[in-house]
Length: 244
Image (cartoon, rainbow, N blue to C red; front, side):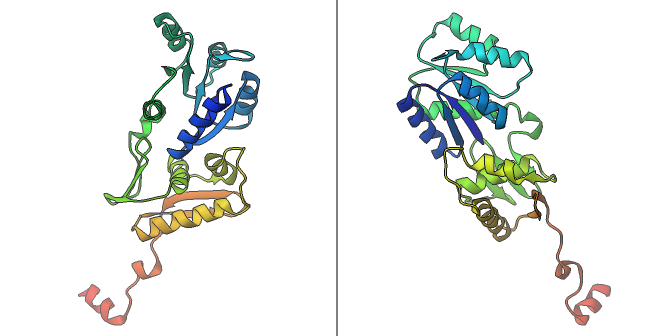
């Protein structure tokens, strides 16, 4: 999942970005509200971590303005100042989904972020399902037919996006955005390699879903189609047995 961090202290931003990436998120970091506006105009984010005191204004005022226009992205205020009860109440009333005071324990920050991210997906349930594949967005765990399957973080990001749009074509650009922040160098075939590896994990674990390529457009996660060997008898002898 892709997160925008709006933090003007470079060292703090670097630490939080590294923690986000270590926990399976794609993190973009900017230091001003102007840059934040430009970022959300071109990228679809799953959540935003927003400082209040920024060089060009109060992050909460920026968030309040976007909420009035119907902007739905989950937002967590992360600030070292404006930490009174009144400030926190103001923040939540202005549209923040959580109001966190710095310094914050990084494990707690990740837990709060995951808790907020579960809220918009309530229609999907706390655990997402497609065929016999289950995925827990909070715990970043994958099960196939009830058995835990170890899937690398990059492939988990791909699986999550595909499961959220199960049965629909997901454009390559949307998958690439979920994997890579714009300050990363991405090889030309990185997405194809990730899809190949995810297909391998699903196939080897006995998943009843598969990833189909819609050439030139993107990929679709769908129920696997039975092979010819699954639908026809292998020999005349087995055919006679099946008719008996």
